[in-house]
Image (cartoon, rainbow over all chains, first blue to last red; front, side, top):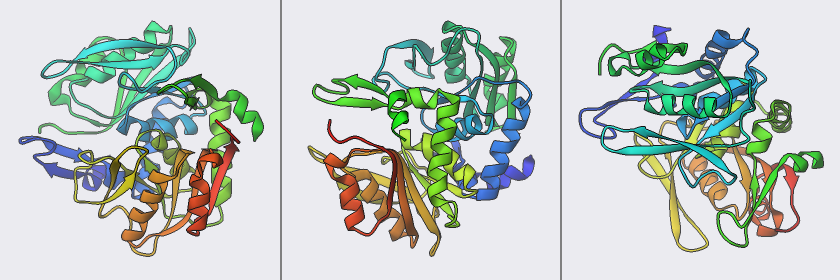
Length: 176
Length: 176
């Protein structure tokens, strides 16, 4: 799906110097491209009888939600502390400098459910790995991780695969 | 759709004392209810040939995105300052105490496009009104505002209707 790359806007030095940001808003606002993205990700998982699709705040919501709709699955959200109103479980993960925490409602997933995690982009894989841990803490089975963009040179997708998770992406960049 | 109300979790005194928070995560994670919400909102606008669906960060993304997919429209996002990487327009709006700002990419909407705004809940209508202004600044025509929950006692939907916007909601609460 390399023609999708032409639809992605690259923004130099954002959010900080040296980063060539992949802006997916140009994909989303083009109706045919948006539909193609959702349908292509759904195709990977359509025969798996997925119970829940998990999206990570906030860009992940944009992709996880229509995928849950398309796969006729429930939608679960993962957010930073203080954003979910009911009782939560949480998972710490490491950032380039320091740590952060993600939370999920305790009733979001039932034991034995088949769950996929969908995000816009996988870089170092920290949030994706933390989210897989949250899913498993509640007894869910991670049936796969899907994203629009994989940045394999940052090793996130490799780390996920090494843990046994299937990773599906639509576009991959070989370098920054 | 009053049976939807039974699926909403009410959380007392969250995020602060005196607020009876309407938690929609229980709707989203039930696949049949989630599908019904998206289909019911889409029904309001299906004959309008909508070009773009606008969602407000972050819970609004959860509803706007599958609606854009279902209506075969483009998806546009509105976020707080510092979150959108490309050039933006912005709109200030008033909060209970103080002010806040919402931004939209300058290329998100083209002149003459038919646009709907979708959010999870309309309370005082501040963010919805600011978003309608952003859509119109770019030359878009606001074909309607859709939400899951309307809180008419906070007057947001009335203010929007007084400005000539059509407002569609699935559930309404008469009081806190």
